[in-house]
Image 1 (spheres, rainbow, N blue to C red):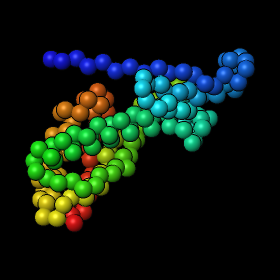
Image 2: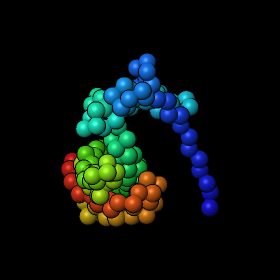
Image 3: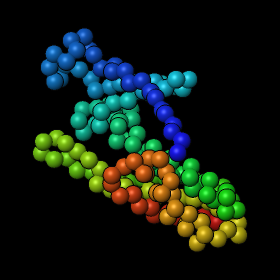
Length: 155
């Protein structure tokens, strides 16, 4: 078994001058700094006072899940001789927040829209999705169910 390591640096950028003197004294913003890559400016969920123009942790998690699925899909399609010409996804998630403020995702549905080369077998293309949860690093790491509802365009 091979181990892989990943690292990043999270830097809080929300100190308005008084730090956390009180709950409304600071912004819920930070940067993700990954060596050799562009900085990603982030914020809290807008429902909790975050900046709606910046990604929040929930956005990042579902985006990572979707991207991991896509990358494995493309790999398996290539191995199977299925030519993918386009792939985009608009995943949906459902979460809950308890009265205590604790939250979690209950489920996620990936909704890839996949363009296949003319003459492609959509049944074979669709069957690939069922194999991905067993290998995708992110999907194997989350505790909520992940399903998919793919659509295809052949042309």
